[in-house]
Image 1: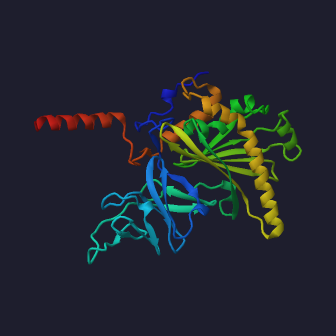
Image 2: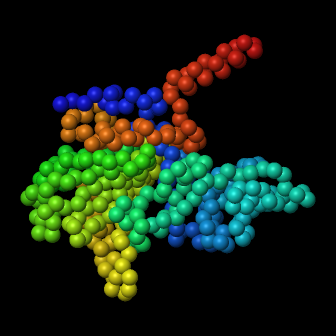
Length: 361
């Protein structure tokens, strides 16, 4: 049974799914926390926007627009002083809220403000919110929401494919059967947690004949497998028997040309004591090995795929639900991080500007 993609969403907002110029307002990964020491400033580019990130004396990471509002010098060339950042060029100094607090050639600073972005740290990673005020929490593992966690970094990938092609992979039931040779029936049920988060859960019995399925069957007849999506850009895959759950976070950033920067983060519940520490390291190491082996064939596909979802069928129902969920979120434009408007609005504004210019001739 074919599904008409045009009917997936009648919302007049511009299309986000598989669009190389747009992404959802939300939390996105910047860099591992350990890569930014106290008193250091670095240049980063996230979702096409150039930024500077520094860590002040209070150990808090601060993210600002890269260029000084005076003459455009790159602030990553500057110097961290206490919790403030001084531009290298004319030595203007800005506090961690972006306010100019000192101009050496003036007795007092002028009222100018550097653009700052909401910043947070979790799972050993620095994150940035791409809007004015965070409306939702950082991505988290649902069953570990109020528990302490251990996390380690898995592989980093630069993939020649749009983030959405990567995102839908865990809920593509057909490819789990064909590429990964899982023989169990897979049927996903969805639950929308909020505007920016959706969960897909497979509750069908483990009746498969693959080696992995046979190994897991003695521990649990109904093995857990669910995927939680945040902002259409980060997913957390949870799987395993009742007594042993593995959590793999796949955090993705859109880059120019519709390609993807992917950082894997492996997460487990924290256990106390020396034996708990060793247990967690073993669990995370095992998760890393399983995940790395599992995605090898997927990576081959992503390097060459010309992704275009023109002919969805009934088996793609979960994917279409993800698309519909994505399209209801707030779309921003790559590089500017400004609200993306519909093509009709953009055309209308262009015409009005042209007519105004013509009338002034």
